[in-house]
Image (cartoon, rainbow, N blue to C red; front, top):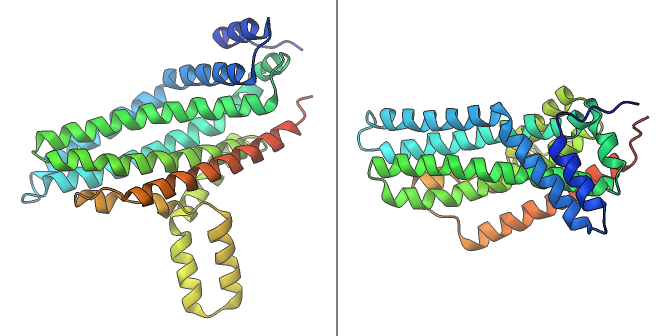
Length: 281
């Protein structure tokens, strides 16, 4: 079986280097993560989304001039929501292609023929995309801060970063969800399923409250199951508070970080288990 490797020379060279002598799993994971980051930042969709968010922020500055002194709040609302929406697009469209692209291009055969575990492959891919999301989120956050400084919203330019941090934590979960689906489904279905998790995750708490008010035991069981089994992404919603100059309390931010870390570990473990049992013959 011929493996196409011409478009992945960096990764294959580095894998040859680290596997030519004794290397630790950490070094192999970091190599995969580094090359995943390189590939992702070369993808035009990332640059287009970042530019688009920055343009939306610039539009918010112009729109804010029509809101009678509410320029800063308008920028925060539009800017942070744009970071979330387009960060979600990056998580979905890049995340679902991380594994499927390797299989389609057959480079997964060359990589796994080295002393590289399938778990190391998945973790490296996940960490590489998380770093990509971190860089893009920071760039978009800087754009929002610059816009706020321009209109005199100096305080909001600082406090908005609390909401930016929570958005990044949410995106790490969506990335893990996308990778789980990509290990056994097609890219199109993986993207659809991940988007549904995003939507349900933001409304699971409201659905549970609605079921409690309906008085139906079946509805309570179903929506309580959704609430506890799927990630509750409303835990990371802080845009409205940020627009009023509030920072997430330390306890809330720490709790959200631990919650995200827990789901990240669970989801990547599921992805590893599925990928480990997948046959490439």
